[in-house]
Image 1 (cartoon, rainbow, N blue to C red):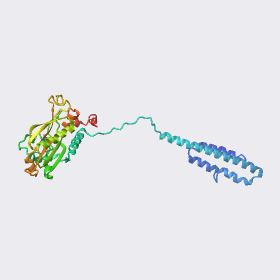
Image 2: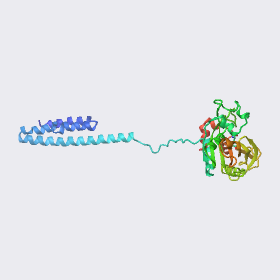
Image 3: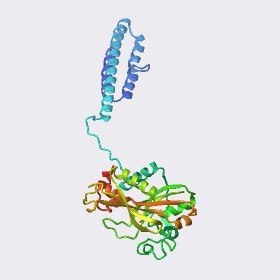
Image 4: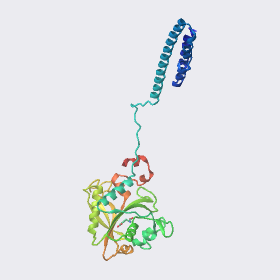
Length: 340
Ligand code: DAH
């Protein structure tokens, strides 16, 4: 009987050694030291012994209890430390590891150029409007005063969807739509896609972009046109460019002109960009033809106006020294990313 506590101590030590979790160790504690534990049972049974034996057994049992408690405490701390070490290593973060680069997208150079053109005119008080890419033959040609036999109407030049509907060949039909829906004064620009049945090469694409402009009011003259477009050229290409207007023909304007600006690369001396002439053609323009005003429902006696059309790809190519229009549509990230 007197050796019983020490036998229990050996058993407890073995159980504690085997314990791997906090639950295991708690079960050991309850099994030996709990109210119904095995060591507790020994202390309870001491009443049957004589006083000397009782004293000796009490001493031994209490020493063994202290020792088991100490062993349990030690093991608990070891389990907690092991758990923490495991958590630390699984949550480890190497702050010296090099970062992974995040690749940012960028707006397409055509989108950027359209935005830049629109911003310049918006700052001059123009509002932005848009028209559909699938347009009526009437709005794209007839209402714009194009002769019934005009070559651009040809099936080989224009994508027809039906006899009456086509993919617009220019943004100019937005002039007609705007005149029909709005009373002068009118001051709008309209960016968008245009389509022509051209074979792709370095300067042609069957899909391209224009920005159309239209200003209609009382007393508008060619001087207003020249002032607005000269201001545009300076804001787009730099304050030192100068402009000149060459007579031209468009069916929907009279008189019509093309605007050239002095070469912003060589400042007029002649270089590769301006093909030696010192001048670069950048847009078509003119005074709105009275027939267009009338078809649009504006009083052609009272109002005059000017219109212009800017080729977006051409402006972007000039500005960035791009020599092949097809680069815009190949969507090669190495090309597109350069304009961020
Ligand atoms: N629509 C013409 C074209 O595609 C460009 C143009 C020229 C627009 C003169 C205009 C303008 O509004 O007045 O070639």
